[in-house]
Amino acid sequence: MDCCCLWVASPCHLSSTLSTDQEYLTNVGTTSTGKLVAIDYKDGQISLSCRFCAIKLWVVLRRYSAISLCTSIDTAATWFERAVAADECRKVVVPMRVSLVCFCLHQRSDDDAMDDLNWSSLRQWMREGGYSTIHDAIHDGNKFVIPLPSVAP
Picture (tube, rainbow, N blue to C red):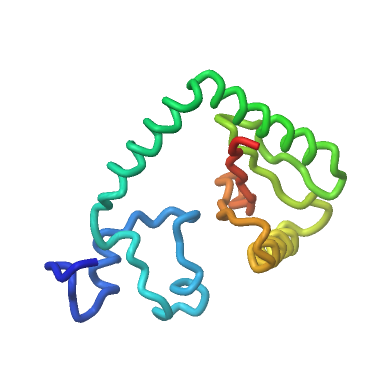
């Protein structure tokens, strides 16, 4: 970030003012201990990367057709949803929509214990480097789920 009016003495006041506060957008470093461990810049300014994302999308759509791209993404999401449904240790929590598969470890016991197990599994998968995603909570009982957005294989 260049020198601008967003340089403040206490960044937590600025970020709390501009915060979007969704569960899947929270920074683990700022919420796990209750004090500011890492400065979260996601609310600091309006991003200029939207223009670059639009150019990237235009190039991809020119290279592949929109129909081919949608078919490829839908095929990958359907494959993953079937793989999770076939696994007895995991379950699909809600039906797949727009290539987003929400799953969790199978609820066999206490919901809080399973949420802790899902959270620790997600952290370990991300630590190993083969899996990068966010977590979310379903409002029906605030159940922990792992959403996996599908991408082209």
